Image (tube, rainbow over the protein chains, first blue to last red):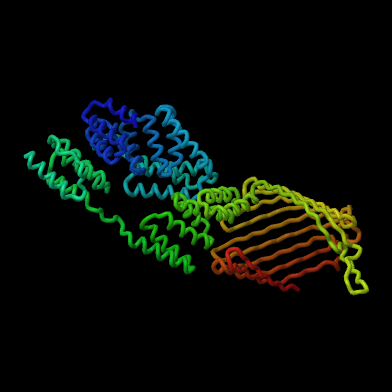
Amino acid sequence: MLLLAASVVRADDGHDAHLYAGAQHFQAGRYTEALVEFRVAERLAGDGSPTWYVAATLVKLGRADEALTTFARAEASDPADRDGLFDYYHALACYDARLYHCADRLLASVGERAGPKIAAQARKVRDDLAPLLAKLAPPGAIDWYHARAGEALARGAPALAAAYFEEAADWGTARSDGYRLGEAKSGLARARAATPAGGPKP
Amino acid sequence: MIALAGALLATALASDPCASADVPPPARADPAAAALYRAVGDEARAAGDLPSARVAYLEALRLEPSAATLEALRAACRPAPPARAPAPVADHYDDGVELMQRGDRRGAIAAFEAARAEHEDAATALLEGVCAFELDDAERARALFEIARGHPAVAPTASFFLGMLALRQGESERAAAMLDEAGAGDARLTASATTLSVLARRGGRLVVSALTELGYDSNVELGVREVAPDGSVTPGASADGSALAAAGIAGRLFGASGPYARVGGQVRKQFVISAYDLGQASGAVGGRLVRGGDDVAAEYGYDFVSLGGAAYLSAHRALALARLGWGSTTIAATYSARLESFLTTATEPYSGLRQDAELDVLRASGRAVALGVGYHGERDDARSHAELSYLEHGPVALAQLAPAPSMRVVVEGRFSW
């Protein structure tokens, strides 16, 4: 959490005070208050940097689907601010949403960039994931990802749908019968095409 | 104006159930910042995130007391109407449980489906999966158990049923993994899961078995026993002990479906009557396809038997079997052929081709009762002695009863001519 506070101090436009206030709430475990401050900062900022903090806070609030959508928005609008710590929170959101391949990919990229403590935690989560990823997903599990992707598309969350389709494709690729793999890939392309381009939230 | 606003806020915070006693006093008025918080509050409220909305509205009020923001805060503090009425969910769930307890599994599945359509729930998925499992709908059951497995509270039970399902479908490795997971997750399941896991491991990709045995037969030659003058029966001269050693190895590297091979043999040594020493070696290669409740297999095998240290029988075997299910109806067909070459002078006339075929149709009524009819035929063509050949055929009737989960009674009747 210190990293989060330290990294927001460098901001010097109109949203800095709100980012800093949000970081203080975040450190103190007052995540709802932190979310409000980060959302205000998001409205004031000229770029998408506060969106990363909004996403991380949503992870702490246990709102994984919203966090995933918000991380996708942050990545599209402000890719430069992505760092190891945000990747770690993003991985936790993936894990909470049962997007295990997504979590593993992000944790692999965390490395030492987020500091030794987060790197160690990332390694531990990856170790926990390894036996799960070594298994083949049964058709029922892949159906579940397709269903979630379909629900996300229906409620206008294409970035979230893309995440579920991508996971379905990952599991489908691992199976010798490529269960619903073509469907997952076409769904992924469709969801990505429907995802709005980056830019700070109005 | 500031004093009026302060009074308004104080009144609001004092009268509102959401008001927090430690909310800081009104700050310097900042309408622009207040508008931002108000906008964040509105957005959160619209998204159903009432805790964030309350925090944002309170902050907006602190920066600029306003009747409109106050009203918005009060609205955010009112309990949100349920997005979906919970009662129908509970009703469908309760209906499902009741139907399940009455044994109406199809009705229960419909009720659980209705409950899940309104609100996905792991416990409901688990119970629906159990119903599907009991109706032998493996695909549906597996999908439902996977849903339930995602929720820690019911995950061990779901894993247990996934293990049972895998065991039933011949996926021994998956069965063992699921059952171990179930046993580790819930102590109440440990004993049953461990027993079944051991059973699953016996059906692994490579199975090696060995057996030794010491025995005693009071009449090895099946001779007439001697009756003493007092009427007591003595074992006779052919009583003998024996030692047996058997070993086998079976491999099916791709699991239940795919090619397989096995070789095995046994040696039985009589302690005294060495003419009855038995040696036997056999091997087989085949292929099997298991999908859902369907099972198709074909096999070639070879047997060699020695008796009393001399070659007795050499036989080539072929086997084909199929078991196909449509709902509660199962059709099973088997065909086997054995080209037998007896290698002693006394038994050589029996050498020839022996064939056996049977077709059965079985219909299950629930899980407790299954009734079936079939037809069976057997033909033995002695190669050089036609008088030793025969043909038998006739109907078969069978009943399978499962009066208790751990008990199975099979009754079979045949009539041949």
